Image 1 (cartoon, rainbow, N blue to C red):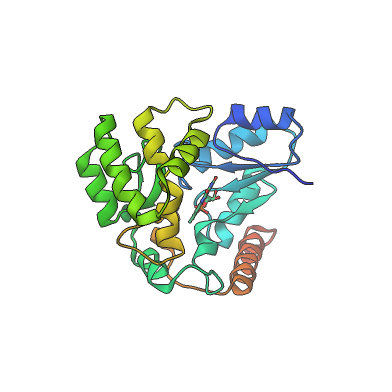
Image 2 (cartoon, protein in one colour):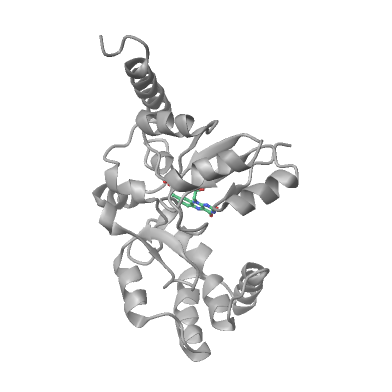
Amino acid sequence: MVVIPSVGARRHAEKVAAWGADAVIVQGGEGGGHTGDVATTVLLPQVVDAVDIPVVAAGGFHDGRGLVAALAYGAAGIAMGTRFLLTSDSAVPDAVKSRYLEASVRDVTVTTAVDGLPHRMLRSDLVETLERAGRARSLLHALRRAAGFRKLSGQSWREMVRDGLALRHGRALSWSQVLLAANTPMLLRAAMVEGRTDLGVMASGQVAGVIEDLPSCAELVGRVMAEAEGVLRGLGPGATG
Ligand SMILES: Cc1cc2nc3c(=O)[nH]c(=O)nc-3n(C[C@H](O)[C@H](O)[C@H](O)COP(=O)(O)O)c2cc1C
């Protein structure tokens, strides 16, 4: 089995390398927002210099220029999340893909309003409502909000507490956050599987703001490789001649 953990800090990369990971994915703050806010351009060279295993760059990549830049930093390759989500092969409902395509860079935000943990997602009415309501300050507030989410998810209270406890493991979450955190996977499912753009959470990298089309995965990979080769040829000997 090949093990490639995803990390957002140099010390985490050093730790997983010491544990024997085969490679490491370094995700900058442009990506999911949950692994830290250091930008890929700062984090990637830092990790490349720190570990001897292959480093895969993630967070903000969508084209061949980015691939070449990552290789120049010393990465072994790139991983793309949002870009593959926005392909014709992706099973995400069309209404959801449209929301991503319409988004500008400013429409993608990192928020802790859903469950107290940072996640990057499209700014939607749900997110704005939650941010206005503020983070759950009291257990009563959290219980009310969790009850609303529970209706949507169909989860039992017992299942919610079990999932919340699993998420709490190793983190300093309050009991209010435990209740809300248990709902996050259901909120993701509401949007990404059921197409409920009004009631769900649409996880996204910042790069959604510059993506405007839905190629197939094969077209996308071919395009990225062709662009990268074009850039490398342009940089090669005689390019200025
Ligand atoms: C819809 C969506 C769901 C994701 N879910 C998770 C997740 O559950 N756990 C995780 O570690 N990363 C998750 N990610 C982050 C990706 O694994 C990847 O690191 C990130 O998308 C890379 O940044 P990019 O979107 O700029 O390419 C998710 C990304 C997207 C777009």
